[in-house]
Image (cartoon, rainbow over all chains, first blue to last red; front, side):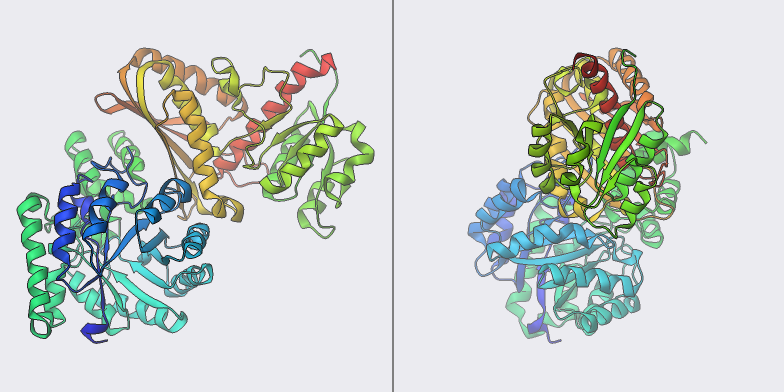
Length: 334
Length: 301
């Protein structure tokens, strides 16, 4: 796959909102969207870290509503698709998808835990009926074998999704894991395949390259890696790895300008390598739990290590923040 | 008890929920499973339930026309779509119905709420169609009610539930929005705020985890002592009809003006597995509604 064929899918303004504890501001979305015009981005995803309808006590309340964030992005995205992440069970068609479509969202990523693609059926059908584009996203994709992964991806395609994206939500994959999964999806499905990395083990760029080599055409990136846990595949570094600095220096410069903008507003939120993020990556626990785990650890004095280990034993999926509280209680009562 | 005979009921539907309901009715000393109605003669579920029912038919509700005088009321465990036609027939026949589908035709009912929130109780003889809302509604509303009765200036309420993947059937999956909307409607009304949010998460872990529901409320003033005692009373009352209901994370304030607690539901395991507390609580509440409705109405009719 040549760099021209790769669709850079920028999740800075959505996954990055996890790192910002969902305090992303409209004014920043506006500035970022305007600046992105010169980048090679194919699409920019905007919203709460858990996507449409994600603002909650459970995950974290948004500073600004989905509507405010989408309105800030829409008029400034020239030639770049506006997209949203949507998890049925958090979002609904009436409350979230309809208004998002009216605000000018082009692309809807309908997401579920890797075994639960069937809950996305109605949302995908609805998006397709509007004439908008629906992609299916399998979160925590490492939690099943390859055969099951392909079979869940097939459900998305049957419902009408025109691409299937797998997320390494815990940042646990090695490049060969990504290669095997993307290859199997490419062979098994007649649609585009995408990959979404997390950098817990410092392998986000390697994994994204491995996905490209195996035939993935949609690659998720975040400026300076701004995303949940240890962050996503850093846009500027993946761009270098793919030779963008040589093939299109102006576009590459625009990517670095996005980094300057992110640094100037949110430098204190940029993801870092931490023992906790490496541990959660190795254990395969959802990256988005990092702030809750560190807060609980601080409050109760329980080592983060023990909380992560127990979360892994109980096989938590995304969206079970309240169980961390229960885990802390159980561990404290031992 | 002011009635001196058994409650004669029919079950519509032959799926897992209907099978569990039938097993409960069969085990209940004060109830008789007068009939089961399915749609397909070769249905395994129909065959199974027919063994413990006095009468069975593959003709659906219309198959019960000739024996309708043998039935006091009906549990509808079919689909929201079918419930609409069932309800018009049942009205004609003068039968009460407990609707386990998400049709939202009948009155949203949570047995334990009747005392303080009569709109959701059974002690209202004009109601003949009870809607069992959702599992998140049945398990979360007692907590929300205890919070709401001891809070002033409620600005938001949230109920997030996680259930085992294998306890969410195809209809639940396809209609997950109905779950969210119905649960939010109930919680909004109990809490007196229009800002109600419901979240449902499916977890495929093995062994399957028990159903859990966390309720969080934001309010200007929270009276902790009153809240704890109200919750204790509600939980005791729920446990009268759902023995596996308990508070696993007691009320705590994660931040000022916010209170949260988590309940867990272990099923009784009649036909459904014990971890499917989400289905258990609906079935158990249905049986409770049938008993109370009968106690209120039978002697008068």
